[in-house]
Length: 587
Image (tube, rainbow, N blue to C red):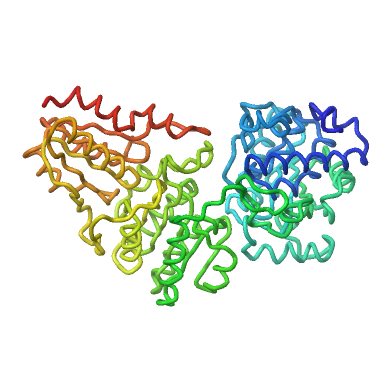
């Protein structure tokens, strides 16, 4: 095996082209074995094997700087730069991060998990190189899906005109984002593919770049020749390389969308080893929205290149027709477009991951909230129970979104409440409304849920008691239920349990009433504490006699964490909260 001999890019350059082709096959085998047993991003990595081999064959990393966009397609890069054990040895599968990581290797420059960044990062590195008189190659690797992101176009615009020295953009064109591509630029890419890069109408040349085209990007020798031609070039160039997403694994080539990211699966069938067929909120909401769209042609479901956020597979997208909109990787555009739809009488519902909503702060504040446009946002994976890579954690949404004026942010605690909040958000015409999708399992309401949330910031008392009040938000409501039961068992009285529902405001009237017969208020929220619900409640009570204990997450970047360990570290556990209660409440 050639792979056994590769411990650095220097070893790679000892191979001839036939041996590099065999190495590519060995790497694909390793990628498939790991993904089928451990999960991860699959089809994007299978498609870029030859490009990565060619890049390290031609360029001298880490002297030459290689920057991956998104960086979830960096697995071959990691294998070639001294981290192959993380892909070859099952006991080491969890040791290597799924994205580029400077803490792992000098060959990685940024921890990047959001898309459309590599060209801007490369422009910055090229600028710094030129300021100090350096000569190294600066290489940005970006896929066609990422090119729909606004920052990619901003970087492309700047790099083609203002970078005067070496800047090499390797454009991996596999005709796919996570799902199909959306946007006008893809018409030009199709034209370039059909004309073998010879079309006069050329997007990249229009931006000021020199241009090369490689028809078969899964041929190592062809890619090596193209990269040797541009190595040490003295001006910006785009090398447009066509590849097959999922290359080398028939199931992935056919099911490119389904295999973009995988859980452990059966290599022969492609089916998940432990598929979950129970109730899931993404499917529940998808089905609910399908019915809403059928009943009302003004309702539009919008996503930004992640249809899996609501399990909108190709089948459902086709059924929804023009009432389903994928804007590509363009979350800012999606928010502004939603404002426009709302202004002209439509009812937009935009869903994406909490980590991606971080990009949209300005559009939510300006286009939606200042103008009070009644759009509905579904915030997915906003929870400590959700994605746990440092680039994708979703626990910062509460302080980010809850402090924008003219905005209503709701946190449901069960299935019926979730759907009722969505219905109200879609039907009302006064406010932009966000709903925080639960992530701790599907629970059912024990009593009737409200269907009208127009009386803003009105908390719901679900158990009326005395002495101690527990205000449990969203995903932590079930924790609150357990906690009040334990308090009752420990102290012999019924405490108060409150479902606050609203993240964007506090119920001053109810909080004032708590002062009459309560001594301690406990707040629980599934997000960072700084700037969140608990701090607002603590501020309301101020220097009075009523004591407040806030439970949530510390403000920190978490990475590949164990949920139970993080909850324990933050004392978000019933027994630990009871211990803390001992110091402030004396029965």
